[in-house]
Amino acid sequence: MSDIKLIGIVGAGQMGRGIAQVAAASGYQVVMFDVNEDGLNFARDFINKQLDRGVVKGKWEQGFVDSTRSAISQTTDMADLKDCDLVIEAATENKALKFKIFKQLDETINANAILASNTSSISITEIAAVTNRPGLVVGMHFMNPVPVMKLVETITGLETSSETIESVEAVAEKMGKTAVRADDVPGFAVNRILVPMINEAFYALYEGVSDARGIDNAMKLGCNHPMGPLELGDFIGLDTCLAIMEVLYEGLGDTKYRPCPLLKKYVAAGRYGVKVKKGVYEY
Ligand code: CAA
Image (cartoon, rainbow, N blue to C red; front, top):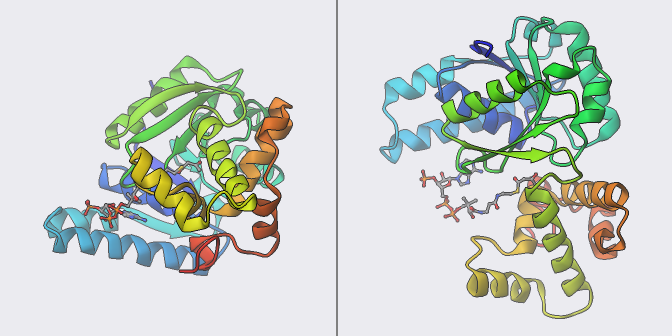
């Protein structure tokens, strides 16, 4: 198994910054890359706030927080990731964008490095096929919020080597997570089940079964879910939920996965959820 010390993160959004924080807190050196400098600064400030809150709550010592902070550097130049042993891509859930990023990573990063994608539904086999190292391409699907959620789904593409999958599972374990291996089918395990539930909640809202609060309270109080499905959709990002439904619908070819027109309408209106302070609810 390869010895992983330096981890690159591509994308400083809510997933990328969470992965960066957890990786640094687990003893890895981390380089966070994004083309958008403001996004990187926002992510750095967000991580710092999380770490400071941990000290106030008595969860972490100041020394631990300082070393975690200093283990993370940031860059807008992908070439700064070239010596990474593992790069975890956490960019927007868009096939064309991911293909472009993986082509660039393949040309830029040390040829023995593992390239992982945090994609929530796009085929790892297809992503791997745009590179010259398909055996070293793998899925590492973290859950949001990354510092809290214990699962990392690990996904094997058709060509992923057993050494690659075992290496990233060891990384996930070192990060304090539990890895569950899923096959490379649309939605993998979590989103195959979770996002159709969120989509169904949109249908229930669309058809007037109850109002948004009613639907969310029904699932929170009736099924012990920590968040209702509509609130969770806002939290994940309605644009991401729609992108996942489209992958399920197209990839599995079953009408039961058709995205709800109301979900489409929210996304068309730019109501993506918490990240833009407006989704099903306003924040
Ligand atoms: N980032 C980092 N930490 C966060 C956080 C965030 N955005 N939000 C909350 N936390 C931490 C808090 O600091 C707190 O930590 P401590 O216990 O160590 O103090 C802990 O989470 C609990 O937070 P709160 O008490 O403020 O709030 P809560 O009890 O209401 O829990 C929640 C918040 C953890 C988000 C909870 O509502 C929950 O588990 N929701 C469901 C989340 C879920 O289903 N995630 C999976 C989404 S699917 C996905 O990610 C995959 C995909 O591809 C779409």
